[in-house]
Length: 226
Ligand SMILES: C[S@@+](CC[C@H](N)C(=O)[O-])C[C@H]1O[C@@H](n2cnc3c(N)ncnc32)[C@H](O)[C@@H]1O
Image (cartoon, rainbow, N blue to C red; front, side, top):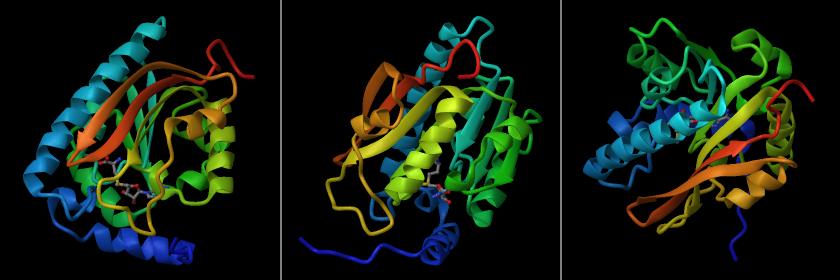
């Protein structure tokens, strides 16, 4: 087994800064995959998100009011979230990504964009951005880049008090091993961090042999604050 030193927060920020300067979908998808695959997977991801958001809406008496998107990148999925919700707050840690997201969401008055790291998210942030609890919090291919288990656990403690549903799309298996800026975890790892939660719906996404789960999770918060 090879052991590599985990990247420092500064290295991680530099890596995402560099990725934000790539072209097109390579900014938010694996650079070694062919571009046409990126387009097809993006379409399939949008369809999967729309389907899971529809299901979340059916669970809520007034449909989806608020969505918090963590790690929105260039905003390729944010308009899909905006089509399903009355208000969306999207956050990302990389200024260059947010700049592109601003363009992607320019016509969407009910979308706001924020520079924030997932691991720094507080309950006060959620109150300020969308009001607590959010109906749905969406993370697509972002928690795999939150490498530190303690930071992930802290984020989930916040989310357990901040959101009614969690919509996760994350890698479970990679055909070509991922590098030191990514870490694969199964859905069960995330569920263990959310005691009392349950999976409402789960799908699989295949991307050039890479396998991701797409899951809608009820955090157990419905009905008010814990
Ligand atoms: C693989 S991209 C996915 C972006 C978007 N969800 C999509 O699917 O198009 C990951 C994004 O998460 C952001 N990111 C990585 N780690 C983050 C963290 N700890 N907090 C907030 N954003 C993060 C990166 O800047 C990048 O824009």
